[in-house]
Structure formats: structure tokens, C-alpha cells
Length: 427
Image (cartoon, rainbow, N blue to C red; front, side):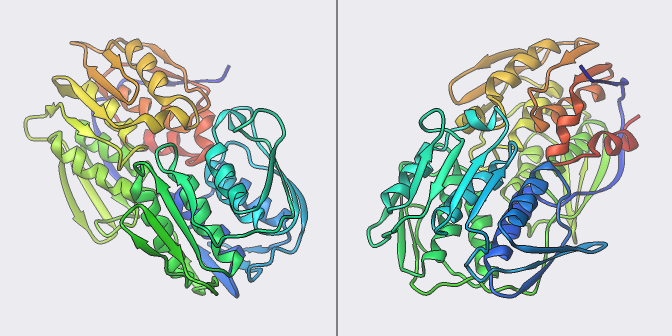
């Protein structure tokens, strides 16, 4: 087993330029591939998840050219060239779910599969919604889970397509991005409460950049009008990843001052709201052009919070670590989606927080964390092949204790050089 030993630290200061947003990167790649015209994408995230999407698009016959700081995609104008392909998508939900929907309407034979954990992540609600519109998607192993086989089908989107909103917002994102391929008017009805709404905002924002405006009635009904087609915006710049920003903003609030470049108050990403949560805990936040600065409170003591985190599910994991540095018990609510991510993040977080001395209550959709008087040194943190577990727990070292991260290379999913960057700013 590979291990990374982090030395004890108490200070964090400096300026970090963020890698591109995973959510924006993979959505942009697929939309550019489906659009008419050539799109230059600047600031694309280089990671395992984007590599899986690029490999899939290449296998589907999309022409992709890489330059020094850009990637050029010649769009297929809604008609993917290869009508038969075997696509390995690793553990990339932002590739697997949207591609499932897009390929279901592409009149081809496609085999979609991934790593074992991907085959444990539910996709039944999306498949049910697609098959209700006449697509032909079959499970190759366990019902409701990948791997999948997609076959040509006669689709009918004349009736509203219903999709559950309380499992993963990626299901709605997948439908929204794929339905313009039908050329017909299509309506999606969300059943139940829609979680992670800011991720849908990202989807709608990017679809609009590619020329497709979605009509919506609140968060319950979305309509794509007939004859909607994706058209390249020519050039698109990918924002820095707001979820990745959370680790460095947190470091500044714990141990000094961090300037985080690549995002600002106008970000289209929901995880930008992490800065608001950090301010509630006492962190000092200021915004500039393409930059957010986070500093330690004057008292040097963060405060516990009780917060509904439905709008920042990924960045909320960082709040769980910040609870170790706060006075009182922190409760993070409405985070049931943690259970269907790269791992069951609720159980994983509770288990690993206890290793560093915290008292933790794990509920079905919440976690309560009371910090110890002193953090337990030399804890060995299991990462569960989950990039965010690894990055989050690096912050524990700022409590002045050494900590070991097991299997640290899982960060390659979104931030391959995270630990090198983190080491630059802590002492």
C-alpha cells in the first residue's frame, strides 16, 4: 500500500492557481462534441475523469486536437460518427451518466462500463427515465447499476419524462444535455425534491453557451423546445474548480492567509458558496477579480455551525474537517447524496474522523462532529479510492500533528498534483 506522511504544520499562506472545474470540463467536452462547429477549450482540467471522457469521445469518432494550453474539438453536429463502441469510463460519474443519455438517443450499439465502484453507483433512475422514452438500455450485471448495453431504438419524447431528483443531480443533467439530440420538444418532470441544484445551474448555463435555452418552471419542470441544436461558442474558458478551492480556503482560515485564483464571486459553480459557510465559521473572506482570499479569524478560533449542505455536497466534506478546528459541535445536514459518490462518504468520513479523536454521530443524511481537546497524532487515514477523502484529511496536519494518507494517488481523479501544491503553502 502506498502511503504519504504529512508533517505537522500550523501555518498556511500563499497564492494557489486552481485546476479547472471537473463539472464544467466534462460537460463542456460533451457539449462541444455534440455541437456544430469547432470549439477551443481553455483551462480544461487534466485528470483521470476528463481523460476518460476524452477517450470515450475519441472512441466515438470525435476529432480532438491538443495544443499547448487549449484543446480543440470538431463537433459532430448531433450525429456521433461511430455507431458501435466499447467505452471504459473508470469511476467518472460526470462522464458515465451524460454519455449514457446521449448515446441512448444516438442509434448505435454501445457498451459502457467502469471500475468496480462505478458498478456499485446507482443509475437505475436515469435508465428508467430514458427507457420510458423508448430507448433500449439493458443491465449487464445487477439491475439498476452499470455496466450497460445500449442498442438502437425508436424513441418517443412526446410525453413528459419523469426523473427522481433526490438521488443524484447528474441524472437530470444527463437528460437535459441529451434531449436536444432528438430535435423534438421534450419535457422533464422532477419527482420529489431536486438535490444539488447548483450543479443543474452549471448544466443550464453551459447549454445556453452552446445555443440551447431550457425553459423551466421552478425546479420541477424543464422543457427543451423543438429544433434545439448545439452550436459552438467558438471558445470557452473553464473556471477553476470551486470544490478544490475549498481545501485552500480552509487552510487559510485554519492557519494564516490563502489567495485562491481561478474563481471569484461570479462563479457559476455552486461550491463557491463554501466561502459563505467558512465565513459563518469565522473565517475572513474577501473577493477580488478571479480571486478569493481566506484568512484566519482574529481570535484564531473557528466556530461550530449547523448547516443544510444540500447546495454544496462536495465542499461540505471540507467543512467536516474544519469542525476539528471549531469550538462546539458542527452538524452538516441534508447530505444523503454523500452515500452514492465515489464511496459512501458519510460512513467513510465518520470512520476516519474518529481516528483523529473526534466524537462523531452519523445519521442517514447528516453528520455531527465534536472536536477532541487534542488531535490524535500519526493517524492512518484510509481514502477509499476517493479523491476528496484524501484531499480533505491533508488539512488535519495543520492541527500540528503528523498524519498518514493511505493510497494518496486517488487524487488523480481531479487534482493529480494536489499534495505537491499543498506542501508549498504549509509550514
